[in-house]
Amino acid sequence: METNFWVLVLVGFFAQLIDGSLGMAYGVSSNSFLLGVGVPPAAASASVHTAEVFTTAISGISHWRLGNIDKRMVWGLLIPGVIGGALGAYILTNLDGNVVKPYIAIYLLIMGIRILFKAFNLPQFHEKEAKPALLIPLGLAGGTFDAIGGGGWGPIVTSTLISAGHTPRKTIGSVNFSEFFVTLTTAVTFLITIGITHWKVVLGLILGGILAAPLGALLTKKVSPKVIMMIVGFLIILLQIRTLYQIWF
Image (cartoon, rainbow, N blue to C red):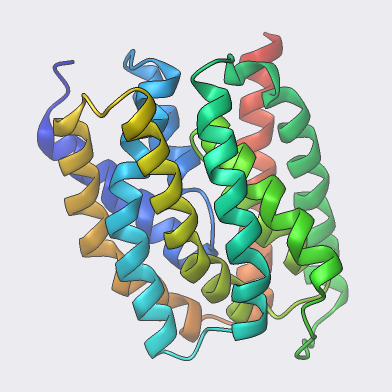
């Protein structure tokens, strides 16, 4: 692959800036770019998750230091997310991830519409206790589809929790913090099963992501929840419309 290294750095920077501030879309945006330049799905997902080990570590620490963390939410998502990440990575080495993409896209499109509706109709937000009955299956599904699709932890987990009424700032911080452990498990599983071959891609994404991670966490703390929800909702809808268009047309 002849893609310029500094282009990869820019991809990693903007992908992490979006992910750190909105709690989603690092894997979706960077993986879409890699697939577009011809990297095979399993190799693209492996490269993205290897880079994310470093970027999610910086992002998670930044959110923790800024007080964007709900410990109950983190523990509820972490263990099932790790299990799902390992399962999804193993499945992708034996299955075409494109098979499940339309179903994930339709689900996320509904979540994006629901978030926009709540943004315009719920001007005030309150702390809400994270329920294990929601977190456990959500973490498992998010980790599994994230590994299979090369991204999806944030869009699935963050969008579902925010649409259920959880405070955007704490949700985004908690999802980002727990994502490190999910990503680490996924990357290790890929390393064991298929290895990591595209090191130029990995290093470019890591450098760009590390530079952007602290800034993304700061934006989450400074921007109002309503604005975050509107941006998240529009972003999810646009991404899923694009995904469905590519699949169907």
